[in-house]
Amino acid sequence: MNVHIIEMPLDFGASRHGSDMGPSAIRLAGIRRRIEGLGHTVSKYDCPIQIDSAAYERAGNPKAKYLEPIVEATTALAEEVCDAAGCGAFPLVLGGDHSVALGSLAGMGAFAKMNKKKLGVLYVDAHGDFNTPETTPTGNIHGECLAASCGYGLPELTNLYYEGTKVDPKNVCFVGCRDLDPGEKEVMRQAGVTVFTMSDIDRYGFSAILKKVIVFFKSRVDIVHVSFDMDVLDPMFAPGTGIPLPAGLSNREALLLMEEMAETKMVRSAEIVEVNPVLDIRNQTAILAVELAARLLGDKIY
Image (cartoon, rainbow, N blue to C red; front, side):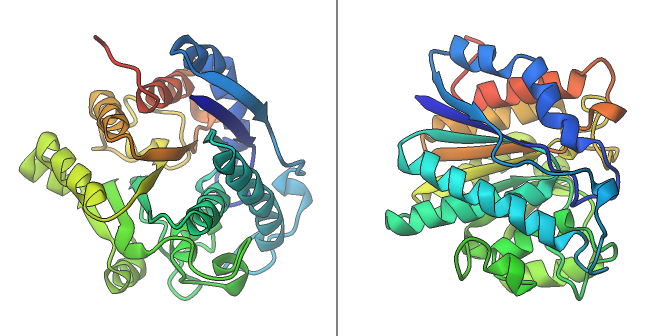
């Protein structure tokens, strides 16, 4: 398989800065060597943006902070993701905060539309990222990115790269949620997304939830984009992330999820976001990010 690694050092979408260094940390953890060791070809490895630090910019709209630079950066990403997928490569996006999903999903949405494919999204995150300007408690766009990709929010975001919804919310499946804002819960229910929370995992067991996830995608879509936020993991496994929360997924559960998704042969693109080296311990979060990517690209223990 040809893999196109795209670094997105963007941290305008979050309150805690430092995730702009995440792609560098993942690179230094050996992601290229790891992927090529699996027999894949890294056909391209680049960064489509040149962006100043958030310290040099004005936040602007308090309900969608740093809107203009985020739109500019994620539009560039969308074009690169769409081109990569169109050439038969696997776009692997390294964030950055989760606002980069705006570009990943716009690019894959365009690719799916051009090829008459149904796109599904596996959103592995402690949070919903389904706020709108009306519900957001912070105004941080990393908390609005998935809602916008599903058609809810500001026109500048919902119509990013091309006009219209990037993914049908009924084809979105969450795993690992444990911190949802009251307003975004209502938007998620209205949209019709499927959610497997940490409580569901505790109640039914991870294996049972995995089976439900696989059935979900096989029954309704043709291709899948995996959006993996490192804060879904318990901080004991991934301390280097912007919003660490207790009682998250274990490293073993996350690795198994990636391995099972690889087995479906449906995953055509992915992003790994919210690695923050400022908060990390000996780069262990970035090292785990590399292992997650490897499992998603076909690595197995035996």
